[in-house]
Amino acid sequence: MQIELYCDCCACRFVAPPDASCEDVVDRMFETGPWYALGDGATFEDMIFSSLTEYGQISCPECGDAVAVSEESLGRLAMSMLSQM
Image 1 (tube, one colour):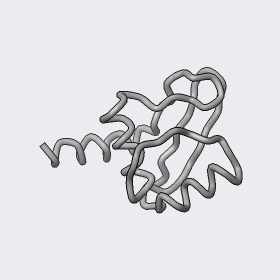
Image 2 (cartoon, rainbow, N blue to C red; image 1 turned 90 degrees about the horizontal axis):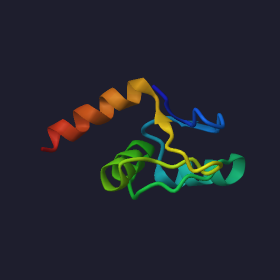
Image 3 (cartoon, rainbow, N blue to C red; image 1 turned 60 degrees about the vertical axis):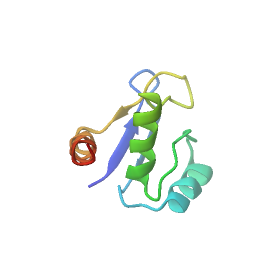
């Protein structure tokens, strides 16, 4: 399964596997863009989870609007959040 960050406003997007390491995600964003300000975490999924729990949204690096996280990954993140409560 892939996690996609997608901006409905300007169509900016970034896709990576949920288990991609933090280093891999940062390298890919640096090489291919776009550069998202994500929270700390060992994996891409952890980085997204951290950002959403701390800030409530992930902002698009192009226009600043909140990006959408793919529906599949939202279900997985929600289950993860519930299991930690």
